[in-house]
Image 1 (cartoon, rainbow, N blue to C red):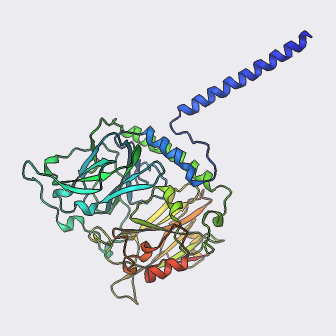
Image 2 (image 1 turned 180 degrees about the vertical axis):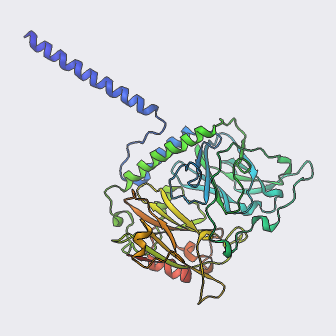
Image 3 (image 1 turned 120 degrees about the horizontal axis):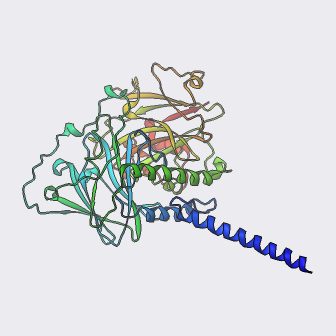
Length: 452
């Protein structure tokens, strides 16, 4: 009988050893700040992860940077563009937080947007509100009791700044549309602004509890270096400082975690499973809000989507809207195409309107037309009519097994339905909107895709 007791004892010891090992593993995983939680296929269950990341970075001085054109590239998630830079942090609504700074000159678009723990935006303010402030200065206060309004301030001394001339914010002319991408910039530390020169404060309603703040800057080829002079300073609480090196580490780790999450969401799913109601995936359609909201969208942007066919080559032809840029305060600010990965939401390459090689329209005098080819290589595109002399090209990365092409348009007036200012903003995308409907409201500005 003794040997039976020995066997039982050995089994108990093995079970205890396994349990202790698992507990140790779990403890180690919990200590990792970028743990991917166990979630099912529902996009809505990304929300616990959003909250986790908010709380991890709460009350830090811009711990995350997304800039895929910087050296090194950082935080390539949520379909970024080479021309856009994002600064990201999170706060708790227990404090009234004040953001102060100067809007960069010669940009296309600037905004501050707040997101709740579901990843849904709750409030957003754009550059238009501060256009008349000296030197483009701004002060924004965040509190859950505020009602999103601009409050005048009484300056204790005359402003020492003069208002910028219109030319300092102007966009490039069509003749400069073939210039190269902006050069990389170093990382940054927040700046300080003399609040005596700020004539007003925008009191912005924030969500209760922990929330995220994203500052977006759509840069032009002539935008000065963003860092450090145009990064908002933070006051109203003791914000933990973040070194440039740590900021890069944070961003790269978060990129890995989010890309793993997004990949899990689309794994083993077909396009009809994801984009219900869409039957033609080879023409630009408008995804539903519930799908777009997962990627922290710009509320002043619209994202059209198309997928390649058998040969993975897409040709896009279209008429470019006139007067795109910062000077168009109540219209279209930015247009771009992004060759991206649907699994990871990373962008492999992009091209914006200021980089397009354009040809004068023979039908609409004063307007320009473009042709953009998208493929894994220019060699692939050559077999389908691509002309390197006059056509534009962007490519998917060789490791991208789920290629997607997006068309992004940014418009400050999103309530109108005039096709000349992109009627796509008038569409109700609580459900996916098919290509025919999108084309009917965009008219001649609809980007026509041919998928080979």
